[in-house]
Image (tube, rainbow, N blue to C red; front, side, top):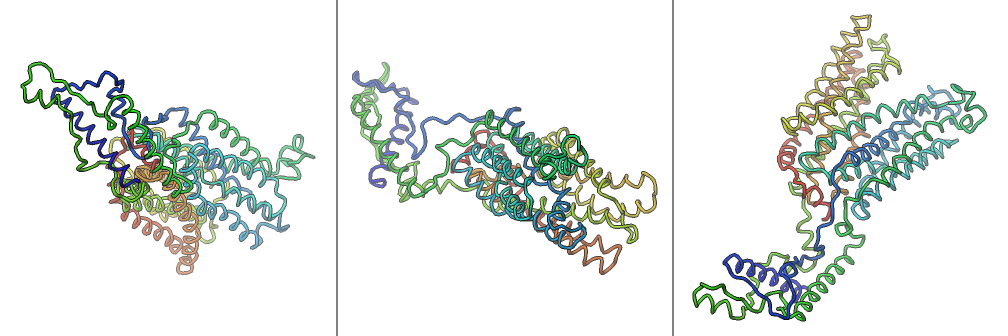
Length: 578
């Protein structure tokens, strides 16, 4: 029925509409028979397969929407690193041993790594879910689940409970990818730099707030016995930071439920059952076509929507007048613009479900994201380990307080960079030059690590911290250039595909690189110290730089192509429908 009736009717209708436009361009005026009340607007309604006649209203990027998305992004970042300051104390309490017990280190690694493992596995699923139920339901469901998991984690009294809660928390970890998808659908080329840089600001705030909540609010019955003694917070010393996070998450959920608009209309969502949707699409197209034909026939017009009589203005020659007053013969469909002879509606739609910049460019920008995420995680791991080495082995011998202060310098610098520098930099130089500049800064910051060591060992005053602060400022500027750029490029490259699924797989790939790189560089660090106790420790730093730089070089053609492609305002949401 589709091949014999539907597609020929659609193509014929399109050709007749073109003929109508030609007549108007030549000066003819179509006049319907007196019995007809069909207007030209009604006859020009597009008969597209499976699409609505009117484009659904799209939400725009506003400060209110950006604030809500930023709050959700910050909540997710807090959630990821909330337990870092107290996880060793929690595990040692549950094992009834001291923190230097080897079992504690192994259990901590499993507990922390479980979140990354779940992020790798479940991020694509949340992206695909958002393509089917919408962005807003996926965001709110993930946030609600993370809120409950945090309370469960704080109430845990044994390792089994906290492992289950951590795994549940990791299951609801898809909000970062869905948040970027939502933002990618409401920005255009003039606002995407502002939007994604603001997400990075909120991410840096999460990096700053998470360790503070986790480090300052544990064991509340000890630092505020007059308030928390003989309460649930004394028997559950890790509940307060998790409950505080849960309250913030609940507030964020309420704001999102009230103020976020859906960016993916129901007509553009992917079906749960493609074959059933294919049959429904064919039946909908057929019934829609024949109902339009019947209504036009009953109104006195041609069933195809063409007028039966044309009148010619005075002054035209007789040949043209005779031509115009005769019944118009319906032409054959020569080159239909609607999909013809494809065998199924889904096959016609799949022809359009391709990335606008090509699959290779999409893979290259996702590879760039993995390089940035993995390199940053590995470099941070090396930084913390090396500066904590004792002076007896020519280390910096810095404690947790000094390391935290240095990371705060990085967080403040990142915030300033995103607010005042990144957007003008992108508008002036473009995404390719910005990411190359940022990557050069990051490689330079860690490449000078041995010289920071030399400076530190020769200065016994406050000046010994100057090179390390300078290093953290360079690292923050590098991250402020690279992360929002790769987020933007992944969203651009996803145009023409299911954007939620693409962001889900990108987030999963980045989580995998963040999970693999830290233990890998730690192994190389240990191996290098067996070669040379002093210079060997920096071997891992340079290997990390070389490997990640090679991936960035591989990704440069894709970054150049996607960065030059740009995003039209109407394309920011078009890819969600495929």
